Image 1 (tube, rainbow, N blue to C red):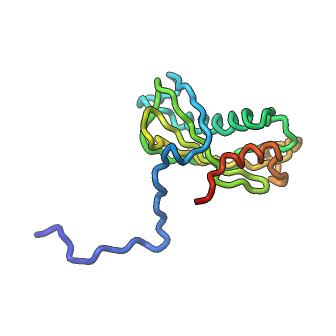
Image 2: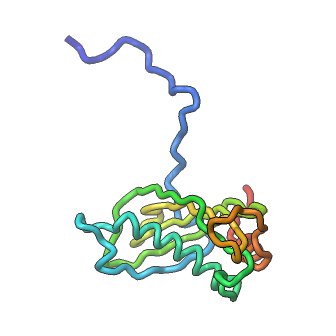
Image 3: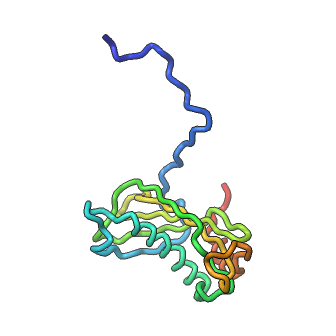
Length: 167
């Protein structure tokens, strides 16, 4: 009895999402290096999932501090994280440093969408890529307030430099 089927191959289901290509170094605009620590690895010897999110947060906020020259926590409008996500491609961990590439996909009226690529070693392909969305709220009202304030001009000027020109 043969395991081969004479039935035609099924077409992909309508609405099926295709996974975007694995990002490479050329997909990012700004760079920062982080030192890995012994405690960053989990029991399996690779970077703990929570550490990826700490790196994303560090890449975005360190860039904002450097590019604006101000303490972004003291601005009248502050960016709070409204959404994060991560696609994992290969394991990384202690002791090698991690290079973090940063790019902005969209600058809206009150929000910014960032992508952060994590690279370790000489590979041109990302080991992981994060999605990080800041929504700007009134600093006096706090993180629980609605996103009704625009992105501060000093932040907007800094992040538009992270957008890739349209092809």
